Length: 288
Image (cartoon, rainbow, N blue to C red; front, side):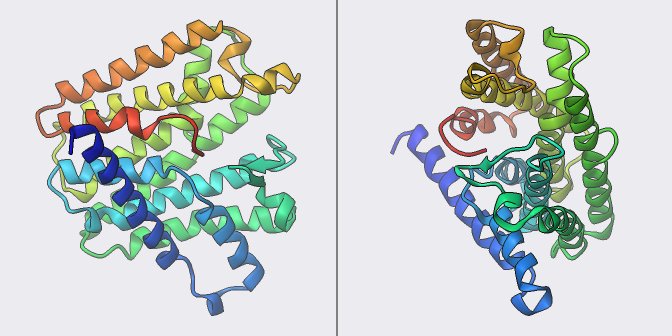
């Protein structure tokens, strides 16, 4: 079996482990109202690529930590991601009718349950980390703080406000700032979660942060390419294609990917093997 096939199989195994853990970590049916639990399951377990938790697990593994020890942290991150999608789709936000090929959660369960589902998933994420087995108290506290900052006024919330208000510019820098807050911060949180689970020292962290930031920007550029039809239909959205040509956006994605891999190589031999997973991990054609 060649290296490509081995990496593909490894990602498939990690994705399956994440799916199993997410289902296990959801509240028991009798612990909450069934409608809310159904909505949480719908938001969290709808098939996706699980990029963010897999990034956390890959980081932990290559820093010497077994994946099971980092699993709670990885799943908490996916709960935050799922919550952000539920809230982004609301009529008062992006007003999306579908998500991952299915009706968006507020279309299926109503806006009231959608808001409560987002809140429930965010808080369940903190609870999952607080109860993470095999992780020391200091690391758990740092993970909770990291998630809070990722969601808060310098993270996802700020990105959504910026998106709702429209861009102040139409150059690469303006889009990079928006995409960093709406996408990149969760990628950075993923590698930092993995490093915290592994009790890594500070040395690889800066390289990991640069890698994750560039990877997040590459991912968003590729995502903008898939949203070209939205622009063609006249739907307003913050998309690089409103300012740059198709070829320019492709070049931007390739440039960011190269920089992401370069950061890993500079981060030391333990991080270099992660490069082999990157193209597989963000390949288009599957739900984010």
